[in-house]
Image (cartoon, helix red, strand yellow):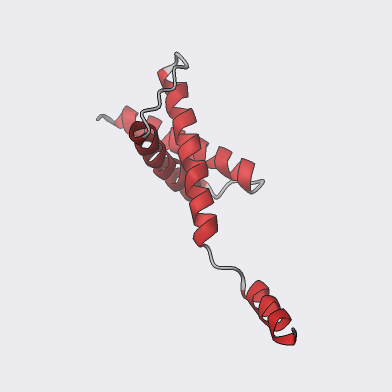
Length: 101
């Protein structure tokens, strides 16, 4: 891979991460966070599409990769939201509610 390929990959990763943050949070995750979310989303999306033998015949290879990375980033954020611990306030409030009952 040459330098231009890496720059395109990073740009697509940043764009996909920003779109994911925009849809799920209302804002992005910062430039580094956007790139990480986008790149991990691309890896997860590619694996998911290959594992399920799904093709995406859009006709434009770049757009196909963006859509696959976006779907993978959504899956990544969904899994992270399931694994993320609740805030201390939510935990304390839930604990006190249970203790009073």
